[in-house]
Image (tube, rainbow, N blue to C red; front, side):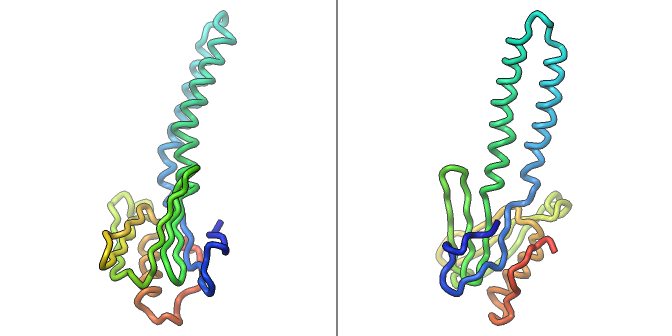
Length: 171
């Protein structure tokens, strides 16, 4: 799912469209596994005379916990995107209330990346764009950050005619 064409200017094209790294979903998946195991154990251990009311209470608590700790983090991850076009860097976040930031490529002075040991093992990192007038724009958990850094450097400082076509950074 790329940025809709109606949000692009004339002759503007998408070079990269990314979500944050899937590591954001590790916690929610673990919570879901633990939650399913806990609900199964609770239902198995409930006395027969407390059924079905106690079973419904366990299910209700499980649903509330699943929404708070599984569904909402997934939706936050799903609705957070980074898009790089041949003119700007576009960030979009939010489930119901959307937030966005557009940074024109012409204002970017420097591109750097950072990644911790964990980030290196998972293949992601933080991309940092520096401008002369604003505080740096950081894009955390960018998948394949080193490859994205190369693409951004080519786009910003390389031969403008040699800008690579839109591609998936996972290739």
